[in-house]
Image (cartoon, rainbow, N blue to C red; front, side, top):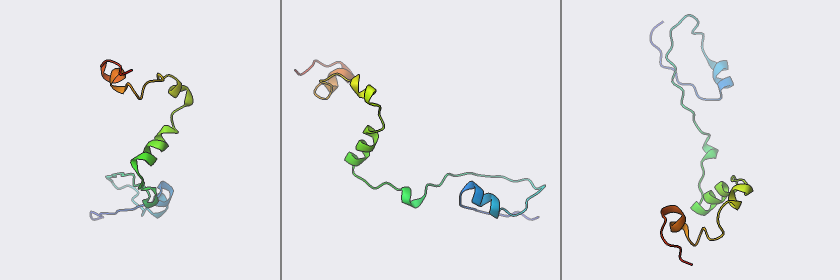
Length: 83
C-alpha cells in the first residue's frame, strides 16, 4: 500500500467505525483533542470568574481572612495592612 494521509474527526467510537482496514500495516497516529465549536466560551471576565468561584468549596473560602480583599498586598507580599 502506498503512503496514505488520512484525517478523521469525531469521537473515538466514530473514528473506529470509519477506519479503513490497516491490518498488518505500520501506522503513525497523531491525536489532537478538538473541542466542539459550541464549547467556545465567549463571556466577560466577570462571568468567567463567577464560574470559577462556584467550583471552590465553601470550606476553602472560609479560610480567607475577613480583610483579605482590603489587604491583598499584605497577604501576598507582606506590605503593611491598610486598616
